[in-house]
Length: 220
Image (cartoon, rainbow, N blue to C red; front, side):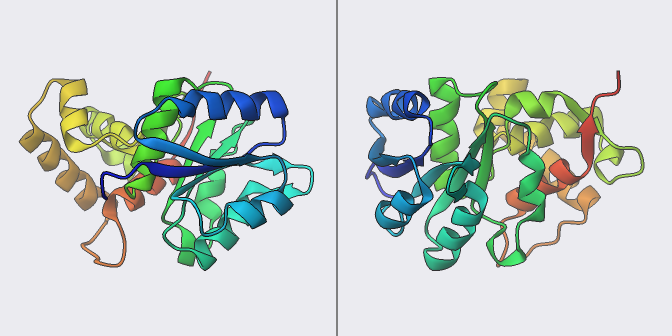
């Protein structure tokens, strides 16, 4: 990454929410809003090839953000995607085609669109992390019999924060532990989840997606 601002394009069909998103990002020194449009047709013209992160509404009248994101990732692999939705469809990330599974994040419009959360998610996504909605993650727990269910409580805390897009120093600050301890926990998590070293795949992304696959709503 250079010191240049992260270029962002927004697809959101509701004018008020689109203006709100653009306004939230306008004053961020490390972000440049390149465009904010309301249709997939417009997005194809002005987002493709011109942004580092495409912030895409999942449901718009002339298409959807997932299909657009897949096309953008295939045509412009350097472009990453942050999906937004009013509904909890975070599991869509699990079903993405293998060739474009990296480079995606997800935030809920209703629970996690504070300015800081949005900016942090955009920057982390641009840097190659997969960011999952913190509030939605907080409402889930490991399903019995899954690999994530075998983690210790501390390992699960670390994995959750990793999936929220925090760096190792950020996780350490949140939990009050050293960066070395964080890395030790992450190494143990990779082992428990069967994540082997692979230069073609970001292990943090794989860990975040495994968390998504292996968790479900907290039982009442």
